[in-house]
Length: 161
Image (cartoon, rainbow, N blue to C red):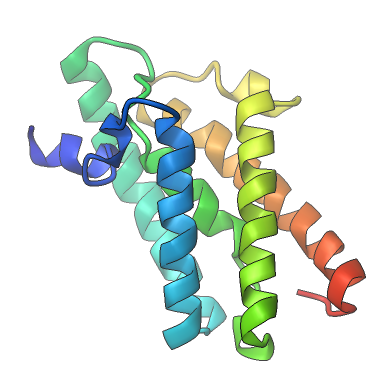
């Protein structure tokens, strides 16, 4: 496999037999937790998320063209980007350990919900082609998940995230 396939498949995690998008999203949730534990600053997640969106758009565009399949299931870098967007602007430094875990789990569940069911406008955005099209629906699913998770989190822990 080429470098662009390595990245677009998120280090081959997209090659698992069942639910590669969910698997990659869950791996990303674990990575987000670890980062939030050691580097809880908001800016870290924004920098990583933007980098993943940029590199994911480029590599998934190349991978899609090379394999000749529109939005192949093994390209999961879009799920990684969406999961990072789920935690944009979340002040993890203000959260205790259990709050971080709960926030990330809620974000993961909601992200998978929005990504799989694709309510409007996510469904329309998915029609875009190329690397941007692969990434765009997950970016919007990540935004939706971020907003809904923050509202739920405010009700559960009485904290605005």
